[in-house]
Length: 543
Image 1 (tube, rainbow, N blue to C red):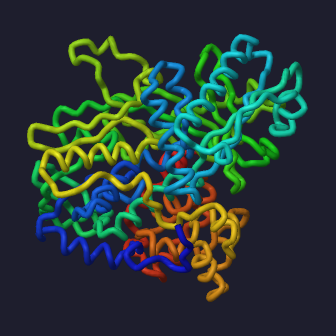
Image 2 (cartoon, rainbow, N blue to C red):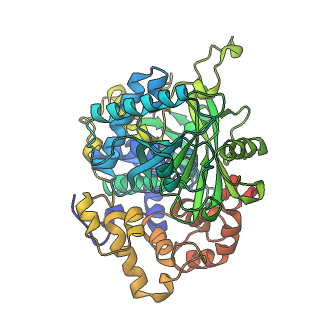
């Protein structure tokens, strides 16, 4: 992997490119693979197919990472949870894919995150011993996945003093110490999806946002441009349905059981310095924790829940007060000064697309969603549409590979094996290369080798060096970069996916006019429309 000072032309997504490629795709020549959905798995499938030399079109009714892929805990898990439930294959797959991201494909976006599990009076000696055994087993998984010790340090026991140093907000009364463990952590999940889509575009894939698939067949789709209302047909030799929790809306026979994962957004000052994240045991559960995740931008996320969702699947999930109360109660069990409801400045919820394997005639036999397997499945409909569902963010690459394998086999496409386990994403480079870049560390963690080019925008125009919002690190240069190179079309894309300003409703409102003006000045297609009405999501409803 070598550094670059500016993006390759093929990796730049813009409103103009979208218009050109949409015109060439709808009603145009047949493509090898049509991918529906541009979350992590869909963008990963587009990259996988394009990297094998296949012609690819990928569509999404909204923006990149509009659905589940932007609502995660921002963690790349090593599979420890699945060891506890004897899902050894899922655990090993997770550990392998974590290593792929951290060491080969996205070391600029994924780094090691320390976590402290405080041994409070609510954690019995037996529970502490079980957790320690689990962390040691997780380190064995790291070894089996051939992830270097330099990438993920070993777990260790902490004294009470060390535990308080890493988490000063903890209640010190009868604190016995803590357990330190490590896992993978994304700078931003939506930025991972953007990198996947841009890398796919660099390989020739047509990335078409705001294009809704209205009807799928084994030979293509009827689609609608959501910006103009115009409809047409995209013809394809193979169709991959990677629309997550909406997969069953497009293909008959697919039953998805959504599970809601809610996170709270707090200001950092409410918890004080947090050099490490926290694992807070959920009372009455042996293998379930609430996570406290410092973000480095003045915010902390606290999550997450695992609750079933019935009925129609919304574009943007609501956050119920019951979820907020549950998370605050668990968090309060370990803090010296509990966080109050009014301290919650935002909240967001994502829906996990779990595959429903419950017999239709026995709905009462369904396990709780927390116990449903995270294995993914690749299913082929009677019409030949290939659907990939289940899984989780960590294993998106393997899910994408399996889906494209199925498409290649079913349609006899001329393509070799997947190369994506060793294919660096846009901005990726070895750690020593990243550390030598002349750019702020924060930008390098977001843009990798492209960070100096983002910084150069601000150097050429001092207005772009200014922060979009007082107290928040995002600058105008980052927004212009998103419009020119990352496929952002309007202020909602900028506020809610390319940056995370929109997770706090008050911050979103304060930044909106400035961001809207930038979008209008620098090429946004829909500066006053698009998804702005709904993009704030659950966060816009809270605070």
